[in-house]
Image 1 (cartoon, rainbow, N blue to C red):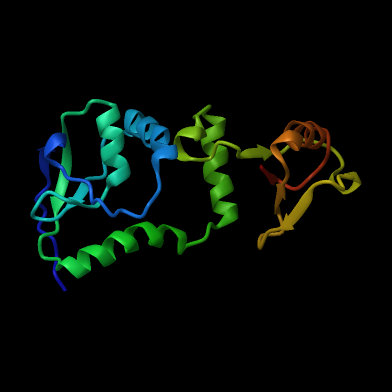
Image 2: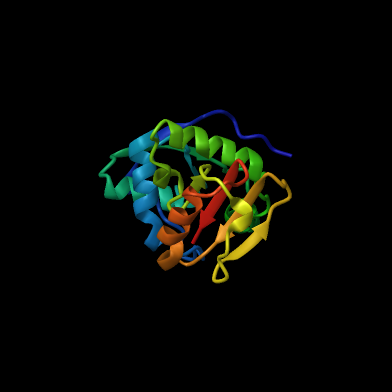
Length: 185
């Protein structure tokens, strides 16, 4: 096992070479990374090989170019063979889908952010709504909405179309219900 030395370098964006066969399609979400870079700064370095070719960080590189950032932090993983670089590119993108959310803790975190009027769009929760008001959850009759039980009985997730979301939120605001309800479209 090799450990990368802690040598983050700030490299000119125009010297960084995107991997031509990057299979990840991300042009339609570049605006999201741009918003996150504006909010948090460029905090996750791009991983490069010794030829300055991207191993991980294509989306961040696109965001930096749009924001006209001249230099970005990079880490060299020059100990990886060509095959390991190919494999790591796929691993870095696939591994984000391995884990699931602890819905109760996620709701707590998002609720805290929403209570502080934090724009959760920046972190990828555009359609996320927490509903905690009302008087009669058990009387709810929404046949066109699919209710999904959560592992935590005090958390209920409701999935509906974007068209129905506003109506669902209005109905739920006037009903008694569990502490946290997620409305997702």
